[in-house]
Length: 593
Image (cartoon, rainbow, N blue to C red; front, side, top):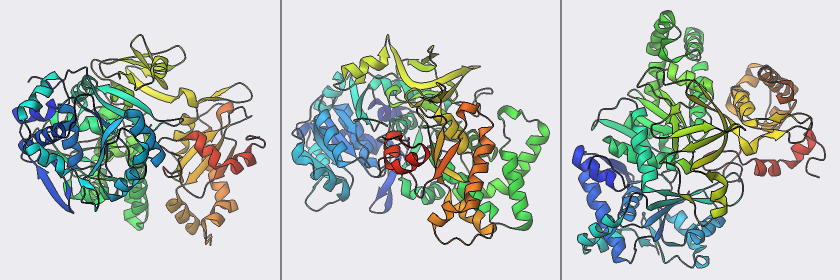
């Protein structure tokens, strides 16, 4: 085939054009286990035949839930799709109530989970899901049925029946229903076709860093139930890149072991990398500390395409050799070609720092509804990268900015619609244009995101405030880990701030503050003064009506468990405000009354 058009075509394409001895690798009983392209194709065919033997037919919905990425997920993904069935990937961190809603709403026939915890979680709501016939596990779990039963059933299956089913699958057929966790309301089931995702993988290929087909390694640790990571899996298959599967808890060790050429990240992860690098470097003394500070300040001035001139380039080359080479070795990034970053806005200083350090970060933009990539930066051609922007729009996708500033998108990547929700679909799909809900600008061909349309608020003076812009600027402070800007119908904006406690405690110790608890730390007058100064410094970039006039420090981070952030780390503003009513009423009396 010339180009894969259905998602299960990608392994066959790789087998025909660039078969790999190590196509996909993940842990099995604590040991790394690899599959060649040929072995992977054989496994997916066994899965297809086994599912057919168990009565799965075209259009049936099959749920997949895994805690950490693993080969079994991918084998089943392709096995399900090859017979025309539809997979429903679900985040492991969702609540039991979400599981019950999604499995019922999708009408899931079977559910595959990775381990005992997830099996127990689904089992507790199983009786309330009428369509669910069985739950299978990847790990061996007492009392549970193993997914290997499917493979064994496939050994006696008819491969002609698998091929006949595959031949009936068209590229515009529904492939997957992905339930977005959402920042408000119930999860919505985004329907994506084979064409939606396969076209996005093909059209995003030109934005990849230069990789050697058959001799490049990717590390995959973001949840493969998320369309961003999942689409990259197909893209890696298309480009002959070996896929090493991991999980968020094993990132550090696996990165050092694998030494990836490419991986995907979210801004929160890069923030943690940056904070860790900074903390370790500043812990040095004397000449080492001075050299490190010089290198960091140099990296933070980075501009693409050599815009800073030859002298800057010469200094940066020295900084990379003397300082950042050690950073890359410590992180396992000595061979890194690119980090694809998405899901939320990346602070420009982080993009400058990592690119300056020789760790290329390719920030992009997209949504589940757009399969997901709309735009992305790249270094493959000059003039295609800009800090603070999310790149230029990829081939075959169109973007325009509505009169109210909303970003609209049209292309083969745009979803079919929301499952069983025609009214919601009609709200966002109009004349083929998908209304993203994001506010943005096109500047010299580069797309820049400024805020979420629904998150903008008006002060009591009638002035609009874009909180995400302010939050991103506030987080440039090394003392601020997370924050949320509030102020709907109030005289001025305010902020709830989660401090970066490691750096803050270190600062307090250097000031000679003997503080024995986080509560005492946050209430200390010098700490309050420090944050006031950090905010005032950044308020200078905004109009008077946008400036943060009050703040409160929080003793814990926003978490998925508390319902305050989504699995993709977006703020759930309503829940955060509900969980901090007392603090908000302290800032704005009567706010919740």
